[in-house]
Image (cartoon, rainbow, N blue to C red; front, side, top):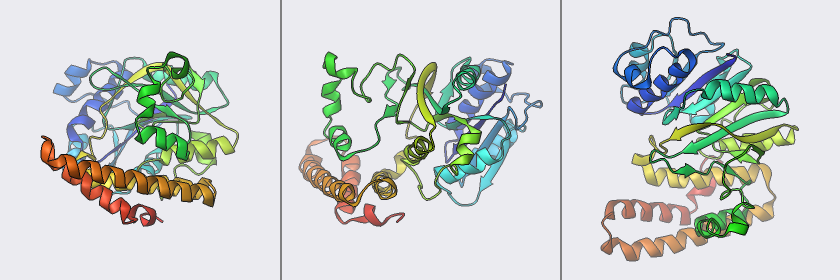
Length: 328
């Protein structure tokens, strides 16, 4: 195979172990995933042409030690500080020499045959720089993974859950990027970054991920720049990925909500006009205010009071404008 695997991890030791087992089972077929979880794999023939690279982003759990002990042939890079996803991914991909790289979150599981399927797709579509596979949640539900670039209208339809309504209207469902069936390959604006099959030459030609995106929208920014360079991004259900989602961020919920909108603002500053930036600011303020009122009224009547309190704190931070200065 000519596809290496890069994984960025932060405090996800157990999930990272399962992810690595699924990857190495794909590459070598030496045992089942379950057996791999119970005992270390023999990966002595692993190389950086067709091997595995893990960047540990300053984890405080035993992630790095687990990789070093149980997967000694995996190339492990330990960062003393949390570099952010894009910067860590750049470091991992720079360590590879293969023409293709599959970049994974640590909370993903590959299905059998995933690596050769993605490699074949890139081989057969020379104009494609990035491929996103089909995702399913841990409960088996399809997870939308390809999107339009984030215009104010798209964000409004998302945060108001209008897309959920569109998904139930047959003549609209297939016309909308977020709600179509995800049952065939197609060119798309951008794909979710939990599993990205990347043509390394195209990735390097546009400078890789923008390190200034700490988390969120770094893949949208990359796809935007690839499109400007004449390259295509495709969704291709040639393999399925199990994506648990949010594993390393769920304990920092308020910070991540603010970071999400900060990265969105950064995307707008990079690629959109000042008018659209003002539209975004008005939209985010309106959403934060509405949700602050909603959660403040509901907090006394819900079982998830702690989560509501965290969200209220996040909405207040958004209204204070923190999202517009973070990372600026």
